Amino acid sequence: MQEETYILIVDDDPDILEGITLILESQSYKLATARDGIKCMQMMREEKPDLLILDLLMPRMDGWGVIREVRSEPRFADIPILVLSTVVEDASRRRYELETGLTMEVQDYIQKPARPDDLLRRVEKLLTGKESRG
Image (cartoon, rainbow, N blue to C red; front, side, top):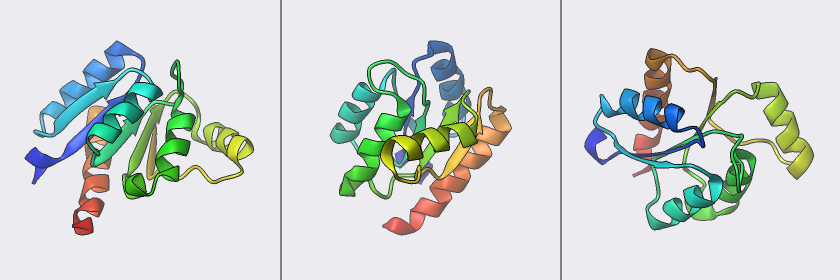
């Protein structure tokens, strides 16, 4: 049920947070926002989200750091990550691989600015794929 679906949106730009929140509110998701990776990880430990929408370029802890932490914690392993960034996907994947020696395990990637219909479609697709997890 969508009412119970919890999405955590992480971006340091308040305009982006507001825009994404407005788009997703139309679907009655439970939404929360964080402005940096450290706050994101604190919030995830308090309540595990069903989906993480993540910017890469942020202060304190960037999106690459969040991905590293999320993927290293077994209880977060099944959380889909949708990267929403101005960084070109190939460049961000290369940076992650160079820094960690690992593949950047994210389920989808959208470059900003995202079109509302595209964002909604991708979010729904990621959440539909998760429903079978129980």
